Image (cartoon, rainbow, N blue to C red; front, side, top):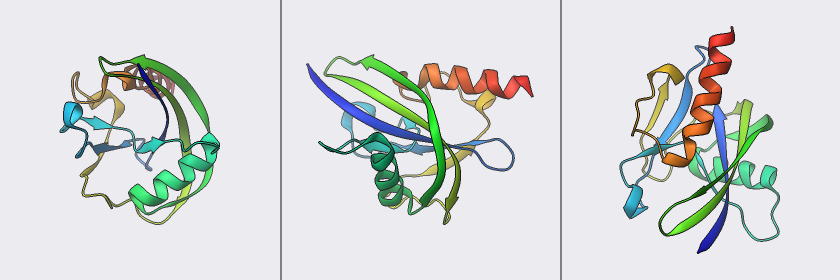
Length: 133
């Protein structure tokens, strides 16, 4: 099975909503939503991939981030190792530079089936963080 290494950024706005992006090109998952990011290139570090992917996908420059969690998930046709980062600060205003819609949403409002299955542990974790304070 094909194994992909992927990064994803969890961006919070001032109202503690997270930024999600609609998938537009990946046929089995088209129309579902995910945290923005993409594949780590061979020889690239996860933090560098996060910088590159969010610049290419959203037009922002990450200025402060930290590792949040790593998730391994097997789909029917691929296996993914996802490296999630909390993005605390960035320059620019996120835009869907690849034709994808963007949406700020409260973690508690993320409906089952809206996001990719591999994102479920992250959604659970950010909901728990949000309920603590």
